[in-house]
Image (cartoon, rainbow, N blue to C red; front, side, top):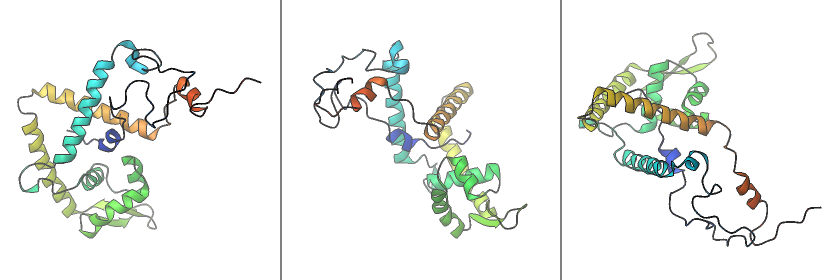
Length: 225
């Protein structure tokens, strides 16, 4: 299964489904008298694919993603046997990327993982201290420092990979090879879409929401001049 970017944080940041009744204001403010809450199913309530009648399917999808995120966090999908949960997610992703892409600087590593450089610096420090990662000079620029997977780090990574492969084998026991490939392909695509959404510009806010946000709650819109 190819490495994918963790999506727990992105899922946990998503709004909960069904926590507020349609038309209610989560902040506790009363709805505008001049703009009564629309009924469920109107175009101002749903956006995107939900307008085509896919709302039940999208609800089921977001629920299953939330369940997956919770269970993945609880078990950390850390493998089986003695190495189960023996390497945290951040360390695994860092070591895995260094193994797949070779030595690189902090900025390049941060960009590839979709996190900031300070986070990489903080996460890689214990890996250097324990000898799993080493700092070396850049092969083309001796003044620059790059991070490289050590022999010890490679051995440790392969030990964890083997354990996690066994876990995936057990979880998908009874699946066909085609089912595993399809699931892996779709999950990779889903993670890529989440990554692109997080790194790209914020999605445009619906015009109805922008209009209601322009006026304080309980006030009448200003008359046109």
